[in-house]
Length: 553
Image (spheres, rainbow, N blue to C red):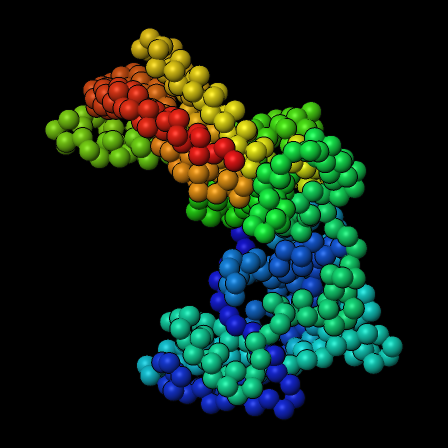
């Protein structure tokens, strides 16, 4: 795995006459120490249509300086990026290219721009001599990579650019407050905050390769128009006008302004889920906390939207995508479900008094968990590197490029969104009532699990409808979530009891005895019964007629 450095910095534009002001005395800065000058030579890689640049991602091969090698920078927040480093090689290293696969797909990474930088570094230190930040004054020269094999020939008819900039990057014990204070001193001295987020962005623009001049790309979901393009959009608009002819202007905003259409709202939600899947891919590969769970939720939300908003999106087109999303969610869930269940059982064991912990129960649980973990991580990475996942990503990009809109996509969003949420609610109501009437035991467990899935779908539909329905949709989703959580806790208990029975059997066969696992089984059984008793009241509060009436425009 590549080394990772969290980069927190501010960038500023300078000119040939800019003089760096004295920063001693700013915040905790007691001394400004010269750290020398270095010459850096970097070639940046991207697809021909600049898919990485569109996402604020940079991949470069750099020589010179203290950190020569391959660097991949992934945005975390404004002014914050994770820089992943790999040793020098002639071609982009696989451990880094894997992290951009969800954006690049099977596009070829090629050299797009070359930068040569003369960097002068000063270190800001506190009174104890500890470093707080580094201030780098950079004199930059840039050329299109195809014409800059010899960077010294920029004046021979090849377009190039020159500029100066200042970077202030936190190191050691420096904090955001220091960046703010240094920034105020710099701007007071006439230094301007940078208009470009990175050297690459500025280099592409100043060498005539900016996004305006790049070939169209199909990766950036955030850039898609709400109704897509071409025939799908025209078809939705025509049908929407035909169906709405002669009707009152529902969904019109204040002052008679037309409000969002159903297509606007649903595609906005779908774009957000696709964006999350793409952005979380490298986080899952890096095994970052909660990344697998968040990516799995995004796949489920997108699939749920396909099922809920069938009047907006053609089900014949979204059903095959939904099947693949279900597959991906299942693959993501293998390790996640094991983690959740293991933690639940560990917490249960921790609550058992020592006098009742008979046999090596902790070791037995650890062995069970580790056996299931073995290979799960490798399997997930194989899935993300495999052709089926790549095909799904391509399908999602194609879906956003030409969304399969139906006639209702052109209608006012409130009426269509409310109809979709209430349709899913009726399905939830039927399943909940059936579960409450089912006999105790396996039949009721299965019915409650079905109600839980219906509650989740209803909640997701309401969340998607929030831009159209506002606070009523937000409150409806919150109430439905309470039902979902209660039913989810019940289902977790069902799964835990199955595992506890398995552990008790293994312990019994090994001559360890299964008493403690049986004790936990009984506690889980009691918890499930408690959730069943609580369901009627929780459902009564969530299913009040006034909550549904508030959704209707």
